[in-house]
Each structure stands twice: as structure tokens, then as C-alpha cells.
Image (tube, rainbow, N blue to C red; front, side):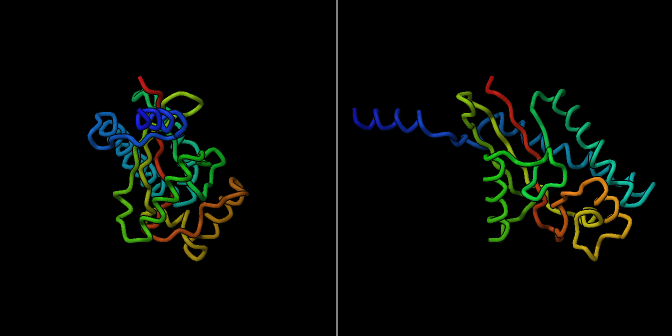
Length: 190
């Protein structure tokens, strides 16, 4: 009886309940939805860079990426966005759960984990409502360093455009393979 009461008490006060991860169908769905976003964005960025150089791609990340996330959200039923501990866009500031997961991704990558494999799925109680949450790491790729790399990798045109559009920018200084942020998905439990 005491064990049952303790279990009931713990489950009522814990803010996050770990999902059964890979065994749950929603996790496979979240992985699929999150995995579809980066290749589409990279294709659009590649075209923008070919047409107007890296400074031309800044507008894609600023305007097209949120539009793509909105369309994907409407099509999938997930609320989708990109988040980062060192954000460029003020709308990309992670909430508490996302920040904790991103910090964990950084620790795991520093310990030798392959950043391309880092993700987490959990059922989390938010404002008394259970939510399915999923984060997939976005490692810095070669293309990313033109706008997110170290100061010596940024052209004067890119640096000027970033200062103009993002005066509070924190999303520079990344090296190849470092986790730049994550694709974040969430939805209320059905």
C-alpha cells in the first residue's frame, strides 16, 4: 500500500514523464516529421547561396524557414520550430524543457556522441496538460559556417547583414559538427 501511495505521489508531482521512446508510434512519427525539415531547408539555402551568396541566404533563414515550419506544422499536426541556446532569431529562444535537452545534447556530443544521432522524445506535463515533446539536434554543416561560423569565416557582407538584421545575434562562432540548435516539435496528447 505504501508503495502504491508513493508511486501516486511521485507521478502527481513530477513535471516530466519520460516517454517509452522508440517503442511508441508517436516517436517514429516525430522523427519522420523532424527529419524532413532540414533537407528541405538546405535545398532552399543552397539555391539562395547560388543566386546571391551567403548574404542572400540570410533572408531564407529569416523568412522562408519560419514559413516552411508553419506549413509543416499545419500538415503534420505538430507545432514545429527551430530553437538554440545561442539563438539568432529572438523567437528561437528555447523553453525550459528545450534548454535542458539542448544542454544534454551538448554534453553528449562533448563526450563523443555523434551529433547527427541526438534526439529526445518525452511526454511532459505543461500547465497540467500532457504534451508530446521531441527535439532533434541540428549539427553545424559546412554550408552553415558561412553565416554561423567563426568571425574569420564570415565575409564582411555577411557580418554587416547579420548586424543589421540581428543586433542581438548569438548564433556565430560555431565550428563544423557543433550543435547549433534543434528542430523542436510538440503537441497535446490526443
